[in-house]
Image (cartoon, rainbow, N blue to C red; front, side):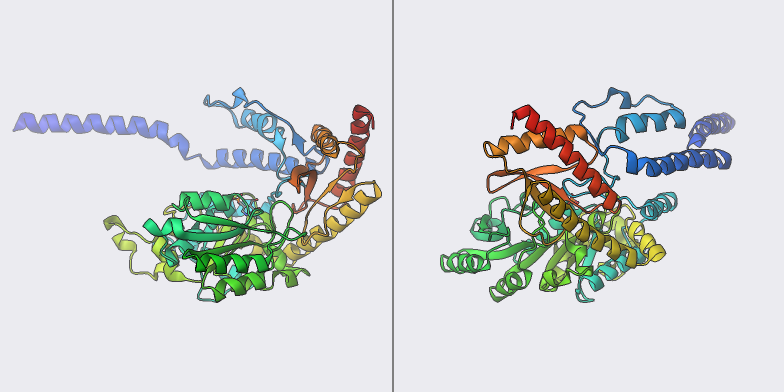
Length: 490
Ligand SMILES: Cc1ncc(COP(=O)(O)O)c(C=O)c1O
C-alpha cells in the first residue's frame, strides 16, 4: 500500500513537471501586453502606409509562379513577415484593395470592417448558435433584419450571412430543391430556367446539391443581355405540357459579365403563376437598389430567395455574402440537423441560430464586419459611394468614345464594356490591347466575349475608385492603344 502511495506521488510529481514544461512553451501563444502593443503598432503602421500609398501604386502585376519564399519556416520576426507580405503578396497579382481594380467584380476593404474583424477575432464569439453567444448571434440577425428592410423582404423571411455569393446561392438553391422535393427519380424530369449570363457559381451549386442531372433551359436574351420573358413563359408551358416538372427560375440583378438586370417583376410574375421558385442573384448589383436606380429592381422583392454580397456593394473586405429566404421551412429542411452534444443549445427559436439555416456550425462572426461600419458611418456614405460609381461609369464611357472606342449598350449599373473598332481582325487587336493594358497595370481591367466579340470590361465598384482613377485609366488605355497600333502596324 505504502509503495503504491509513493509511486502515485512520484507519478503526479512527474506529471506536474511535464505540464509546467509544456505550459512554459505554450504560453508564447498568450502574447504579453507590451509585446501586443509592439506587434499592433507595427501592423497598424504597415496598414496605414499601405492605404496611403494605394492611390499611387499599380493595380496589377502579372505573376505566374507561386513564391517559394512563403513556405512556413518559423519563427520569423514581425518585421520580416511584413516585408515578405509586401513583396510576395501585395506586390503580386491584382491589388484588390486598390481603386484601380476595375476588372472582374472589384473588392472593397473599408477600414472599419477590418476593425470589426479584429474585434470578432479577439473576442472569438461563437456566432453559430444563440445559446453560445446571444449577443453575437443577435448582431448577425440584426444585419439580416437590416437587409430585409433594404430589399423589402417581409419580417418573416429568414437569412444567413455566408462567406460570399457562391455559398449564399448554394443555400438558396438547396431550399428551392427541398421546397419542391426534387429528389430521386424526379431529378431528371425537373427543369431550371436561367440565362447563360448567370454567374457560374449557380451551375456549380446545382452540381453540389445533387441536381447535376436536372434539365437546364438557357433562355434567350434580348439585345441588352436580359432574359426574354416571352420565351421563358413559352418554355415553361411547353415543358409542363410535355410532362416535365419546372420548379425554379433564376434571374440576375446585375450580371457579372455586363451588369444587366433581368426584368425581375415580369419574371417573378411568370414564376409564381406557374408555381415555380423565383431566385434572384443580386450578388453584384443588389445594393444599387438604395440609389437612383431603384426602379430597375422592381419585382426583386417578390423573389422567394435573394442573394446579395456586402463584400461587393457594401465595400467590405472579402468574406461576406448574404441570403434571404421567405420559406423558413424549406431552409430548415435543408440545414437543420442536430446531435446529442448539441442538446444544451436546443430550445431557442430554431431560425435564431445561424447553424440551423446554413451548412456551417462554427462560423466566422461575420455580422460584426458590416454591423460596426453601419453603426459608425450610417448608411449615407455607402449610398453616395454607389451613386458615385454610377456617375463614374457614365464619365468613363463618354471619354472612351472621345478616344475613338466603341462602347456596349447603356449599362444598367456600373459594369460596361468597350472595344477598339479596328478595321481588320478586331478581336486580335483588342486582345493585344488587353495584353498591353495588363502589362501597364496602373489600372486593372478584365475582358470578356460578347456575341463572339472580344471586349474589354470595366466594373466600377471599389469604394476607392475615384474621378482621378478613371483619368488614370484613360491615360493608360491611350498609351496602350498607341503601343498596340505600333505593334500591329495599324
Ligand atoms: C452575380 C454574381 N453572383 C455570384 C458571385 C459569386 O460570389 P462570390 O465570389 O462572393 O462567391 C459573383 C461574383 O462575382 C457574382 O458577380
